[in-house]
Image (cartoon, rainbow, N blue to C red; front, side, top):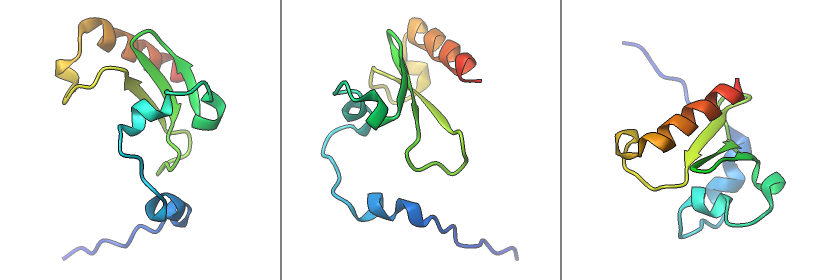
Amino acid sequence: MATVDQLWTPWRMAYILGDKANGCVFCEKIATDCDDAEHVLLRGRTAYVTLNRYPYNNGHLLVVPYAHAPSLENLPAETLTEMMMLVNQGL
């Protein structure tokens, strides 16, 4: 039987042990104009690009829609198109 080693990422401890916001972490990230502090790289019309503060891999980008939806299938075509264009720019 295969074993799984414990994934240890000590740089995440500040987040794990710290105070958590009550709202949506993605909405709070763009609620201010502090894009540098929040690692927001680009704001589009329907989505934005940000760096993951606690990535598993270096260079991990997140493309986040402004709209809340349970799944990509629930987003309008305009948002999906812009998200894919932002992914393309992030390459």
